[in-house]
Image: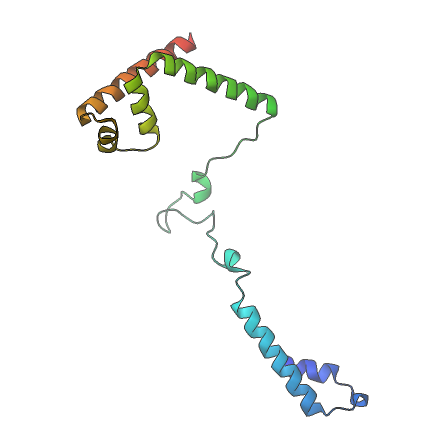
Length: 149
């Protein structure tokens, strides 16, 4: 129908063509344009979005995704450098206070490995891995307490 409307609107009798041929051409082109538009992937991100204001668990829930997402704080360059230096200093202190095994276990733990994976990787018993993590925890607590003073 849009193609027919455009044919009626744009037809010029002085152009030596019949209205029927011109209308068929306009309608065919409009159909092709509609098919191309419908199959184009351009608007998929917009059409399949998830609202940040949608309740998380069920329709009656008061918590939304927007509540859960933490705000990203934009830092100035000076603050970034200071934080990097503090992070480097803390890592050096941790490395100095931990044994080789404890450091390997901590690194593997931070990578998200299970106790069994760590035990297999380090050729140790799972209990040994657990004990090492407990020692790491105590040492880090003492280290952080010493830093706060």
